[in-house]
Length: 117
Image 1: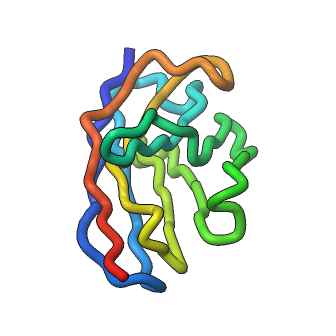
Image 2: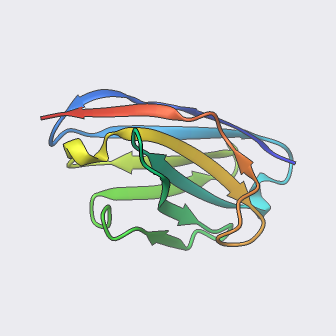
């Protein structure tokens, strides 16, 4: 089982950038699909991006071309580089892990991202 801790959230102006990190504990990190999700106030949690153990990536249409997910298996860390941020990107961002794509069974506590206009 892996445990996840996100960091890197904060307040940024529209057009700015942030990089989120998700540090994982556990010796089998490299075997997991890793995903980022976000949840705005009063809304459901939505998929943002995912990366396979081999580095294959997939993005939600709303962030494609602006966000980049990556992982460093040696550091047990997955990243979400967010550029050209928009106010509608404001949300709590969660990191998740799973052994198969689309099925995540471990979640972090979330990190707040606020984009001001």
